[in-house]
Amino acid sequence: MDFSTLARAMAYARRHRRVAVLAYGSLIIATFAQLVVPQLVNVIVDTVVGGIQADSSARAVAPALLAAMIAIVVFAVVRAVFAYGQQYNAERISQNIAFDFRNQLFAKIQRLSFSYLDRNQTGQLMIRATDDVEKVRLFIGQGLVIALQSCLLLVATLIVMWFSNRSLTLVVLPILPIAFAVFFWFGGLAQPLFMGVQVRLSALNTVLQENVAGLKVVRAFGREPHEQARFNRSADAVLEQQLKVGRTFSFLFPVVFLISNLGQAAVLYFGGRQIIGGTLTIGEWQKFSLYLAYLFMPMGQLGFIINLMSQASASAQRIFEILDTRNEIANKPGAIELDSIQGDIEFDNVTFRYFNGGEAVLSAVSFKVEPGQTVALLGATGSGKSTIINLLPRFYDVSGGRVLVDGHDVRDVTLESLRAQVGIVLQETTLFSGTIRDNIAYGRPDASLDQVVAAARAAAAHDFIMDFPRGYDTPVGERGSTLSGGQKQRVAIARALLTDPRILILDDSTSSVDVATESRIQAALEQLMVGRTSFVIAQRISTVRNADQILVLDSGGVAACGTHDELLESSEIYAEIYSSQLIDDSVPAVAASNGHVHLDREAPVAP
Image 1: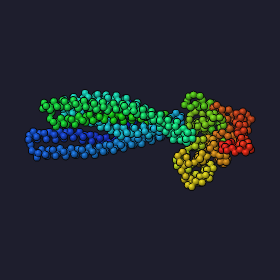
Image 2 (image 1 turned 30 degrees about the horizontal axis):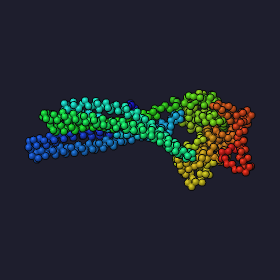
Image 3 (image 1 turned 60 degrees about the vertical axis):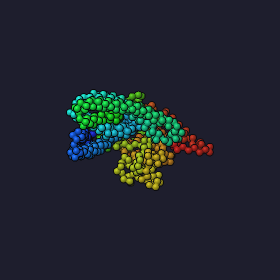
Image 4 (image 1 turned 90 degrees about the vertical axis):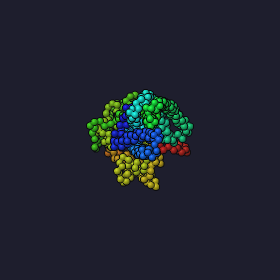
């Protein structure tokens, strides 16, 4: 069991010192109120036995009995009040710590490098922010309180027992090391078992998350039986690991109670001999028996404590793995703020490898873009187009070379000021739960409705928005489920335009719209790109032929660079792409001339 990691998690209680003082102060008072009761029982029993032996009247012993009973009730009330304070405030601490952990995890995940997110599944991250945090919370709210109470009760009881009857205490003492040895042995055994449970639970959560997100694809391809079998395998793995834990703890509890019963049997034997020998009264024996129960009570709770502690230790380790992850993309000390830029962009001998290893995705890429120019990126899948636009806002850092904005290396400026200058419309559109207005104003939440409408008009989105009964207040549903692909794309374009960026990145942003809508968006974008440095990724030459520069990428390098007319003359790759698209454009026309209808919303427009 990793006690250092667990101690680090428990140290979060320092942030809530006042509540901690209330919780653990109440615990101390409640425990000492509990310790007084056996002393009062001793008085009652010896008073009754003494009265019987002395043949005293009930009236003679009644005052002592009444006083002892009232005292027991008073201490019981005190214990109940402070036990409530202990439990309630311990719960407050645990909930506050869970709150801290979740906020820290969310903030950390928000800042984690994309390279880290590429290597870790979404379901794994989700389970750490939910179930793992809950495991730590349960230990701090319940297990830690019980463990501290058990330690306090154990030490205090041993002290009282020592001064009450040393010989009987010596009978009990040899049993304690055995109990603690069992405790630590099971702790070391259980922690990796619980770690395995969390890992398998993460895998199960990943399968569930992927299926919910891709449910339409699953049903479209009739893969429900396959996905059910996949989920069953993950669920079986969780069940198998949980049963291993169950077998382990099914053995632990009988061992703990066996040790406790051995101690009780020893005390019964040696205590009975002392009573017969006249060196121990019945009241003292009853008191010692109660203290013996207090002594073995923590041992009976060992299984529960080990269970919670082992789970918390495994979960805390998984939580701190994320919190301790070094963020590869971060502001360097002394990073400068980019207040206002012209939009001068330069890639200077840029090389990039994912995860800093393997084959280079970009190799010695160099080009320069003047402020206000439009640059088109053209090339086959895997040629490096998306990598270039990911390096510009510093989603990843170059492996070699430099990316410069207005002469500043992007690694020398703050991320916030750099990304504030960049507007991005990605090929895969992401919308958030809320209204259409909320999504358009995502980058500028303080934007007025007029500004939102202006951006929507520029993105050819206003008309379809007003067709909805609630207009801009229409909920988009989870991930924009109530909108079509083209509608989502236009909302995303409006969102980027509203921020009025100096650098505009369009990653095949018209891929999900029909030809008529594409034409309207292109006309609007041509006006809006004026004065902005724009990078456009497109599969169709028709959408980029008017660009100031067209970069033809091939195998991670710039194969050719120039205008449309220049590349037709100088680049064989560009000419081949151009010719293939001309042939594709002719297919619908031929089909129509033969009396066949050919519907292709993605058919390229002839340049």
